Image 1 (cartoon, rainbow, N blue to C red):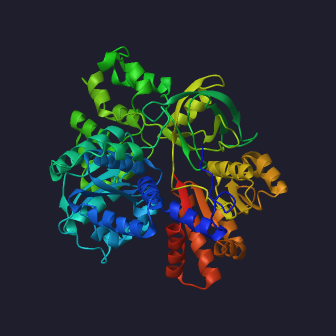
Image 2 (cartoon, one colour):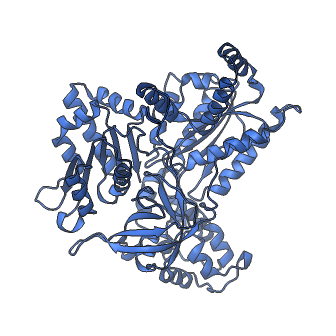
Image 3 (cartoon, helix red, strand yellow):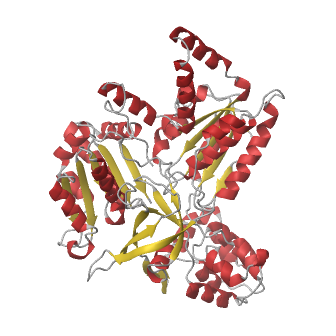
Amino acid sequence: MAPISLTETNSPLSADQAKRVRQALESLDASQRQWLSGYLAGLGAQPVDQAQESGASQVEATSVSTSLTVLFGSQTGNAEGVAELAAERAVAMGFDVQLMSMADASKKTLKAVVRLLVVVSTQGDGDPPDPALEFHELMMGRKAPKLEGVRFAVLGLGDASYEHFCHTGKEFDARLSELGGERLIDRGDCDVDFEETAESWIDTVLESLSGDLSSSTAPAEANAAAATPIKSAYSRKNPFMAEVLTSQPLTGRGSDKHTLHLEFSLEDSGLEYLPGDAVGVVPQNDPAHVDELIETLKLDAASKLDEGRVLRDALLADFEVTTLTRPFLKQWAEWSEVPELERLLGEEARDELRDWLHGRQIIDLIEQFPVDGIDAAQFTAALRKLPPRLYSIASSQAAASDEVHLTVAVVRYETHGRARNGVTTTYLADRVEPGDKVPIYIDHNKQFKLPDDDEAPLIMIGPGTGVAPFRAFLQEREEREANGDNWLFFGDRHKRSDFLYQTEWLKWRQQGLLTRLDVAFSRDQADKIYVQDRLRERAETLFAWLEAGAYLYVCGDAEFMAPDVHQALKDVIREQSGCDAEGADDYLRRLQQERRYLRDVY
């Protein structure tokens, strides 16, 4: 259950004091809030002059010999979760840990660092996550501080199917060394199945630091326990088997897309979520594709693997059997000894390899370059684990207490003469029916949340299934009886067949919860119109909302939509404020710093 928002009506504070306390608390992470609660408890138990003296003594008593900074840059929460785990284990060992988002880090932060662990994800085409953009710019620029004497380690999170795998982690690792830092251990690079690699990295780096603790330093078990939030028994490692309550199409007759609304039961799970969070769905691969793959490899579906598994079952449930990654390609090149593959993997053929990989899957590679003699154990050892897929939650738990809703666009397409299916979307669309149970877990996204201030206006930009979290936002605001204005920009191909949740938006518009609704249906007229065009058309009003303190949210496609929307916002700001392009960049950067420009793009 979400905490009750602090106001003048439920506290002895004035309205202004309550607002300032809320704003201060929003800027703190879990460990900082934990420390603050203890400090305030002590402050209330002694006279003011003694409390001030005690506070100063606590700061002075923080031993440099045990200080450790854990810095994270996270888009969806995975890097933050790993950083929290590292911090918890370091506290338990006896380190004095500062856990901090890159959004809150500065040059001053780095100058105070003695030991530094960095956990950072990579987005899109090798970009830093949004909360890390300004810190990344500082670190890569001329104003970065010298870091002689700082001992550091870096863990990158990414996706090996992308060309610039873990690029941001690699940048930070190299730059920290260039600035004079001493590397504790080699950089770690995590693929989508990141847990084992991340935990191994944490264990290794903390072992390398264990000698820094004096024998008199007692493990802070109580502090570690206090810093660890109470969690549901269900997680990515142990998903909840949720019953499917509803699976119904959102797209109408004549649509060239297939989008589903799904509802899952959370009854008796203890799972909790907030608008902006995501559901992780643990899928199964298409049996027809698995059978074709086994036949192409000339393997026995009943071949025994470790832990009592057989090949077909393992390929259905445990391994990624579609996405062709560079590590798998490299392994296949070694097995096949085909000069063409070796050439493609060379540095000089990087662009050619990217083009060659586009649209190809594992089965295309093994058909084009067959290899004899590969057994089931060898083949599965070369595969990465089948990762869960994340979907933005389209419901508020305040409105649907024991349910969670998803908006899923079913992926079907054709490349290189072969029909392709999205692994999870077709699993949900073709092989799951109401009454079936699907393994799921909640993936908390602390970077994409509603403001606590119910008076704050919201601008929500979500074409296609990117509109899902905004359905949750409005359900939540309706339950809260929030008075803030809400403005939705939605776009898709055709109004008649692709206006997702049309009835609900129009109902909320009529009731006044949805203050403004602007839509863009790209193929209903000769000239295509997109949400970014609507932003430019509403430039004056849009800028006025931003100047009045509106929070700006963008959800959906990262490759095309998000950059186009970002450029449109820059154009609006430049036009309305009279500033130049650099000034518009600074304006949006300030919104990001204030956590008023938030993106959930994929």
